[in-house]
Amino acid sequence: MTHNALVIGASGGIGSALASVLESRGARVTRLSRRDDGLELTDPASVERLLGALDGPFETVLVATGALEPGGHRPEKALRQINAEALAAQFALNATGPALVLRHLPRLLPRDRPSRFAALSARVGSIGDNRLGGWHGYRAAKAALNQLVHGAAIELARSHHEAVCVVLHPGTVATRLTETHGAGHARVPAKAAAAHLLDVLDGLSPADTGGFFDWAGKPVPW
Ligand SMILES: NC(=O)c1ccc[n+]([C@@H]2O[C@H](COP(=O)([O-])OP(=O)(O)OC[C@H]3O[C@@H](n4cnc5c(N)ncnc54)[C@H](OP(=O)(O)O)[C@@H]3O)[C@@H](O)[C@H]2O)c1
Image (cartoon, rainbow, N blue to C red; front, side, top):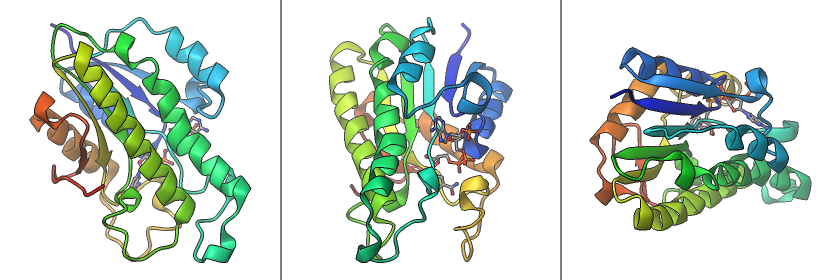
């Protein structure tokens, strides 16, 4: 049976690698992105129009969108840099946008067989792991995304008994996002990161739904 996959944010560094690795593993991939399809995640009408036009079902749905500096706001290094407009932009893209996608999940995932949903979060969204402070908006928006996906997993488990719905930390990956802020960190090529993430998903079972895992499959503290 054909494995159908949907990659949202397929124009991004990790998103395009996820789509091509899925394809190389035999999936039929539907790609959606702002650049190629006009999917504007901060515009609810755009999400409704493009997600609503999909029939599905998809055995795999991945949300690989996001940005560290939405609206061009630099990550905060100190509390005095907290800015309402920058926080709103963070939440709109990194939390609300994926949540608008989650609205479609019950319809897009099959009920009668295994399926998986994952959204790309970030380890810096972990409250338990935050020992450095700073990057307040990005961290908070990813923490909100984690809660939204965790809640979605609980609801989904009632109707989709074989579904896995998780947030993933991809590692530090060589993409546009880390061009300016990845200094000092070894950056993994996007293809390798995508392969790791798909291996992690392959290894998860419905008992793991609602969790937060890194690229090696290790749980990340909330
Ligand atoms: N790279 C890393 O080291 C790293 C580490 C931790 C977490 N992450 C997370 O991984 C995810 C993917 O990051 P990446 O490194 O692949 O970044 P990227 O190469 O910059 O890709 C970002 C993707 O998000 C899309 N996007 C941005 N703003 C959007 C909007 N308003 N509406 C719709 N789509 C929008 C982009 O679409 P366009 O092509 O149209 O701009 C692109 O597809 C992000 O959530 C990021 O936070 C990355």
